[in-house]
Image (tube, rainbow, N blue to C red; front, side):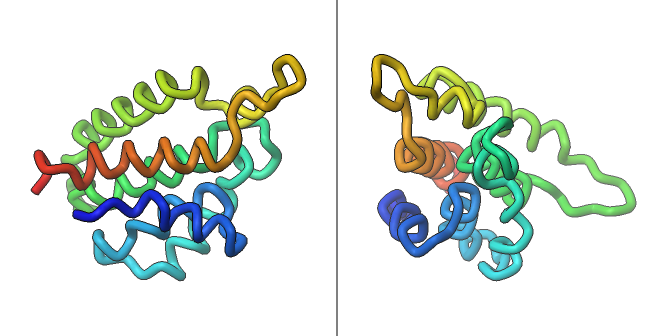
Length: 139
């Protein structure tokens, strides 16, 4: 798969929030239409709407993990373990890169400079998605 990291930033420039930019960039690879994903993930932007919670870019990545890993069996679901395992690895990698998974902490100002900005979070989340969900080991 050709990297789509730059496509996530184009979506952000169009007005998508961080969660939408990540999730919508890859939803076609999982057979889900972009408009549905756009609407479903909208409230997760800006740290779940008010910059106090989990990073929206990471939330978009986690949504994709569920779409990719879930068996979708409503009567007897058996895929939670796999989805949780992938999600745990996503969160670990994201935290290792940025030092936090909380939007407010990532965007904190240190010595007059923002620690991390939304573009950094989006790029990191997109790279993690590509590695864990669409990398060579997943083909």
